[in-house]
Image 1 (tube, one colour):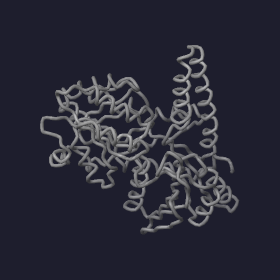
Image 2 (cartoon, one colour; image 1 turned 120 degrees about the vertical axis):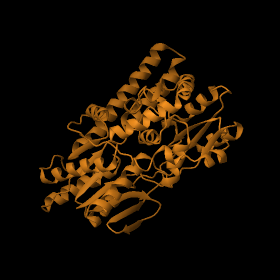
Image 3 (cartoon, helix red, strand yellow; image 1 turned 90 degrees about the vertical axis):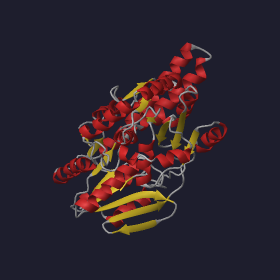
Image 4 (cartoon, helix red, strand yellow; image 1 turned 135 degrees about the vertical axis):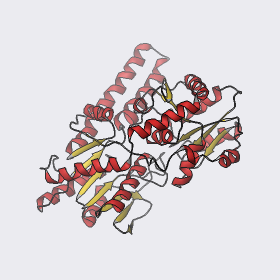
Length: 410
């Protein structure tokens, strides 16, 4: 079998999607005799092979305001890459441009008497995160000062736009032979897109890799964190979608005693602005994206509390990794965080409310050791293991290859 992942959301500084694909490729290499092809946008056309693993980069332009992410220049080059790599099953990790190349390739395979199912993983709730929510936020904010009625209509316009996006993106998912989601809640969300029979494939975490045993006091000292001070940590993209400015505002709301540090680790369009803020504010640290898995696990274990304010998570992989590292979590009552964080090992507060987040940080700090231990135990008991994830995934793939095609042509 030759599996293929097709996405634009894979870069040197990507988060959960890259982690998922990297672990999938490792699973295939170590536990199967199959092959894997990864097709992504790149700075130049390039094909790299490592044993049974192939990575194809297609020269593509940078997405304005979203560097280093790139968008495929069109379905033609993607289709050509599929023809050259001849996959037996394609998994879509994004719904722009690439699906049409995959559907055309699937139709050509069917015409020649072979199967190539196309599946899609619901990594991001695009209709809500990038269409409905920002439009509602902008219109309501712009119109609220004029009239409550206008603000209400602004909300409705956002709702209509989101419903339209659900219909448009849903048509892509419905063309696929199988749709995948990380949680039942996200499968239910896909039903709003008009998609049924979604398979649940939870994301995993290397339970031996992450843990309190990786705590590194030397790194804390190098960061300037004293033994009696608290280190808050966020790992992820530095952009408005992740609401990282709310984390900074919550940090500012914290009292001088006990003393807290906030470390923001990652890359994104807000990095320069956050670095300027850190230059002017003691104990605020903006750290580079950590590419080394071992050092990343050490950074997590060396913090005291994991914080996140993004309301649009579809699984919250970084949160699970933090919990596996023995950290309690302070987040917001939205998206997948409702499933990832319970009062027994963390706190959730209102979206966009920095003062409430600061209060929750103080509450968690008072019980940090107990809550952190419960967080770790919860992840162990939940069995968030990558081998389970991919056993389920490839089980669905095997059944799919034996079944009749569900999707329609290009």
